[in-house]
Length: 502
Image 1 (cartoon, rainbow, N blue to C red):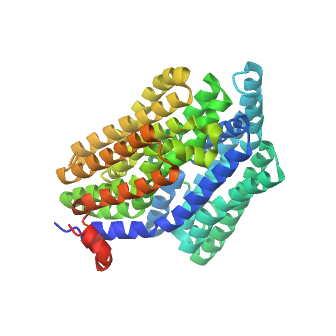
Image 2: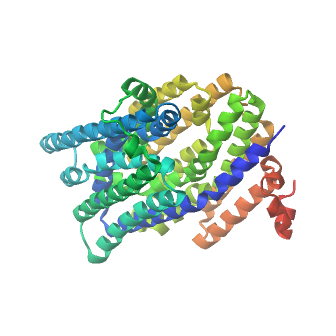
Image 3: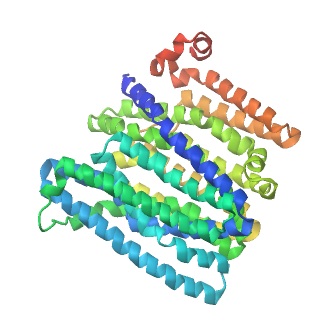
């Protein structure tokens, strides 16, 4: 079996981790500074308002940030005069929907003040940050266009340096001068506006160089039916992805308090770091998998899928050990003793997000093979399940109940995706060679969790144990990972050659 394309995919994806890891690290630093500089109630109110913004931005974007690349590429090849039309259509739709959501935010604010089901401070912050909805949705569209027309350096600077850098600057300055949460909210809106202006300026120059501005017709040809028919299924997936986290925050505010929102929301970004390797590998998985499917090379598609999933599981293990096995001490280290109760929340969330990552690109592969109705079905089941389960568990257990609800739906959704993938694309449920890897990962994370739970070693000892555990799993899994073929240069290092040779 030809595994060379899989090796190239994994090598190329690994090189992309640098920029994403920097943005992730800066984002976590921003989160830590924000949590430590605000009271639990203020942070909870701010997190609740941003959750409403995330839902609104997902709706306003309408899946266009995922769809624009496909339509622009096709129309450039076939009908250049429709490129301008599709861009105008998407931008106008985002502005229109975003505007309605902003108006709805003001109406919602009045209703919330009258009903009293939301903290007044949180409702006031919503009036400030609601402007982020159209800004973030438009920004997502522009970033996707930059990926097509601008240089990689422009994308790197705009997406991984400028955006997280501006938010960090806002939070850092506010922490130094002792500014309140309302000032931070205003700063976030200004930062988003600056980012949008910069992206627009870079994109305008790129359009001028490519000749698109000159080729736009006086009357834009708007391919309404094609665009919306393609984008609506993408909207459902994006909305469910955002809904999983945001809905928990909204329900916590309604059923408990802003303090419970803070407990849940503080550790949610830490748990989501379990997805960083998955999201990075996806960039190069898509074209490789699409080529195999188009050529009818289903065995190669299966090999690519599981070799990628195996690497994701092992490469993400250090994050799982920190966010699950060492969740308690890591939470206190990052956010302080006042968030000690969030350690259990982080551990539960980490399990769900790691399961999502370790199962590989099931939903992405379903899109590649054209079986999108199963994605819609899984999304629908997720929404139907998360509402009653979330209500019952959040009512009883607060933030911990929200974490259990979220992780349960993540597992359920991936099981449905994977069953559909096995049935429609012939991808193995779980090959024996990779089953061994998953069993080892589970045992390793579980043992370290038990050690931390009962012996409570110092954080330094826990980190050392996590490093040794990750190295041991890499050694035991070396045959399934096929390291000599994927990273042959590592075999030239004497110590690593002994460690990684099958």
